[in-house]
Length: 241
Image (tube, rainbow, N blue to C red):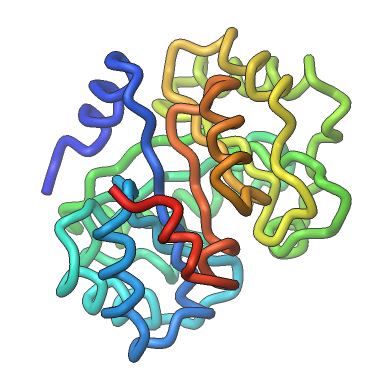
């Protein structure tokens, strides 16, 4: 599978909204993959994202291999660390944590990833990643040792996102964090979207269809939902094709 980024661009141009189901390798049992992916296939989901903050080496490779047995949806790596890179997937969001100032997540991890990526065949999509404060310490914040941007600093969020685009990022991802107490505010999404000429991804804290649609209405091109599906796969019923 290829041209995942171009397909995202095409959908954005046609104002077709995209939905990624995020699967954390640390939380998904292999025995449950088949039934979970079947529900995803029957929903409006357009992508499967795979990744987490704390994942042991080799686990992602096994999980992605199992996922690929049950779906034709593109499987995109959303890695929390270099050890989560596997050539079994179709693509990888090559994340730069531009909201933080830890050099490991601005460039060092990327250098470390090069040997794994050079001959992998993965479609590599440079992505500016912004962690937005949501009222609790998230695993991303803890692992990356960076502070999120306060949600009331809307101009800084917007300027940071635009800086990512000017640096050559192909996507911007605003993240409230796994298990966030609430999703990213609509006015933040709207402000950032006004500044960008590249697709905008929104994730974290979205727990129902209404919140998902509010993110789309505010300007999200692709919404990522993970925890809501982990806690109850009945959410898939609301999102059937």
